[in-house]
Length: 85
Image 1 (cartoon, helix red, strand yellow):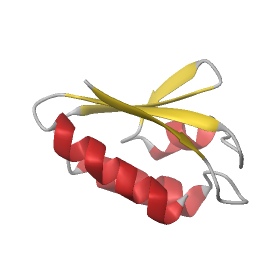
Image 2 (cartoon, rainbow, N blue to C red):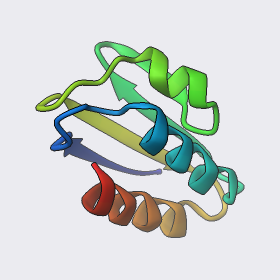
Image 3 (tube, rainbow, N blue to C red):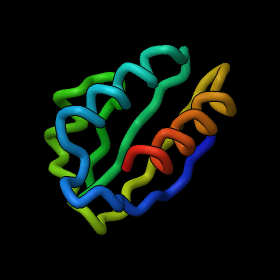
């Protein structure tokens, strides 16, 4: 399992546009990918689940990738977070 913690820097938190981009990115991988925040975890491939977390600026999230392409998925997610959130 590949996992990392990230602190959200975007002043709007994880809102619709980046949530959609994140879900689309995750959909390109076979691994199971989860986002964890506020004692909840949801499938990143489901945009409504990601948005339901209500992640705000300054909150820490954990992203987990588990499966045959977890290394590639983990690196792509980390890069996405650095560039977009």
